[in-house]
Length: 445
Figure (tube, rainbow, N blue to C red):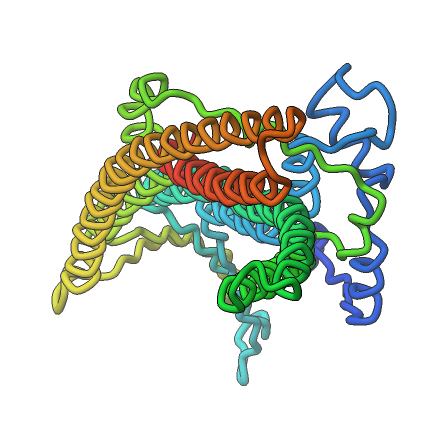
């Protein structure tokens, strides 16, 4: 009876390569502590930035963090990007599952004869070797490959979303800083103007309503300046969240926002439209999901053809060795897999509709982004012209004041007009940058 021993050895070898489970518990205390300890000068972030920008980092930490460095920091710490990468790993593991071949089986039936005429022992050994037909394994691999490609492209989409969110929060932070700086100077000028009008009111040189209007304007500017300070604190917290670090990590960090002063012409972006319609990561991801749906439909159609199980058998009966060969398959009599085929066909139509809808949304984003950016540039041009005019009037008032031809009250009024137009230009500049960001989101450039 050596065959059972051989079968036992075969089972032992089969189970020798099995994976084992290793627990990895998550501690909320440890994860919270790790997040609170994140900084912008960590060695891990330094290595990541040096790999991304080889030879461009002269000293660490950088004296000033520009948008490119901040983007790399956000990509390094981003939890959304970590989730997208984990999903990519799941999809890649799906390719391993799809490529696996069905395992053979074995049936062992020992027994004894109650009233033997010869040997009392019975023994039967029947292996089962499954054979997939109609290229099902190749179709499974094709479907898993398309899904893995879609997951990889989703990582690129997640990376752009991290960049887009960082740009928007950094722009809000920059605009609140610029607005607060001008409002601070405006409050100082209005305070001086109100003091002068107070003296004139006591001397009876101006009516009270004129002083009241100046006092109301001063109070309004003070409230706007306080609100701007609140927005700075709020935008700093939002910026830290976009970077994936606690807000205290931004203390003593100098941030450069000079790139917000650059406005590329609309004509320089027009050539990227076709590229966005054909090559955006989310477009390619939707196309890969459609191809996966096609492979899934082909797989369900292939399942109409049954797989085959070959079972060569051996039996020991009455001191005689007997050999057999069996073939088994499922007969498609009551159904031909029509239900799953119909579902797979519907999923393919849904994937096609999703792709067309996404491409239509991209066209809308491109049209709205281009039109919005063009109008925002025109508004910014008008605001800059007003600032230039107000600055000319202010210079004339300063010259007249030095010559004794203009009163200090008129000079302060000219400064207030200039600051009011300057605030309008800041607002128009921020709106133009917001429109540019929306156009960049549409182009993914």
